Length: 121
Image (tube, rainbow, N blue to C red):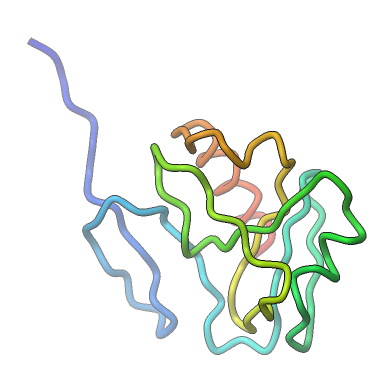
């Protein structure tokens, strides 16, 4: 017999309430905020006050891609934000190395990203 240490996922909603359930990433969105946050691999946070296309960020960071915190799930590959897509105000994006693009997201990976995001907020 073993011990199960899992619990439901809790998500913060834009209105400050917490939503439980689901298997997705706990994303601390900043909905309603007037900025977009881009968290770089070194933990540096770039705040954007207006929507810009993803390619503006990725062109300044070769061998990297952008992903939204809203679309990250354990055990699946992290979907990249298309170059032509505008980054949305109130969301958090991560800049990740291309080498991670085809690798399923693991729990330790997710924990590392969550720590970076919580430090940024």
